[in-house]
Length: 427
Ligand code: SF4
Ligand code: SF4
Image 1: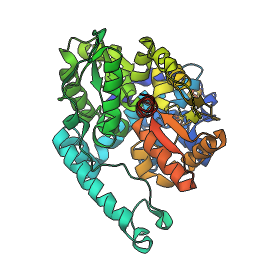
Image 2: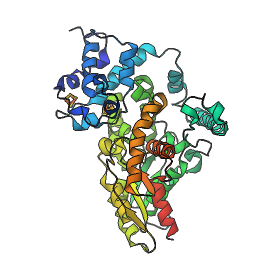
Image 3: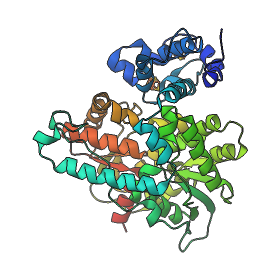
């Protein structure tokens, strides 16, 4: 076998060879369930990867499409009997595709010239926010010609015209009227910074209430997920290094996340992006989801002790793929929701199935993304809940869009915002 052309792919040959072709990964793969196409499954992609490595298959448009038609939902690696790290393989293939096709692409420009610079990213967000205002106000006849507006349907876009979390939060946030029990750093992620800043404020407030001092390093940048999942390893590396520097010398015992994807990337992808870097490894070891930290501190018991009278608000929970399968967190949010006063928790069917969001996938394959989202919206509706909580801003946006599209009046809340809503009403 010739093994010179695709060096990065060659570095994951062990993972490729682990695949026993059993097809267990077909069940639950959202893109396979819609297309029944073998090349969209992990097994199919792994076969393609082997062919690419052996140079019997080229990096054609068709192959590039097969590798982009994936939500990085981690279902395949979770159910795989020999535990193949499928995303490692997919990313390696995408990196070769990306390097061949990156010249002159707007995606590459955004990765390289915008993502590493928070001020530029903020400007781009404001521009996009202004454009989506125009899009929403445009009459249906005109809107139907816009991208992502099939049949004149206006999709829900992220609220990007607000002041960023970066401008709202101080760098050091100490607990008020309380002894400091822990000192942690907070990694917010871009969606929370630019679209849902109140979530970041609530995360810090809830931790401060629990006696936790929260450092919010302003030098932090995008975690690198858009670049990493697209195969742009050079930008992913640059971003990982910037974040490593921002978090390196802080005297903290944990790095708290409230975005499932950012958490999963910091925890798992940084070891592939910066394989020989101890600081990146230390950073990964410290990652903890904010709900898990609240439970570790016993905060749910305090929620339970509050006034529980009055009519109950029915809430269900959607497991973000990167939180449940990426970080292994599913009990903590449920424990919190079950203990909140005035709340009745109901489980929905397939709570951990992918919502179909997944960043660039939703932009590129909007119809497919909404087909997946529709099943989620129906499960939420069937649960009878009037609120669905989740712990990932990308899922939050996707669920809002999917429910809106089905015409269901069900609120979507990040868990931090829902805790704040419920507890503020009890003060
Ligand atoms: S489940 Fe794992 S071993 Fe089986 S075909 Fe899929 S990737 Fe290969
Ligand atoms: S990550 Fe998800 S969408 Fe991609 S191949 Fe695996 S199961 Fe399918």
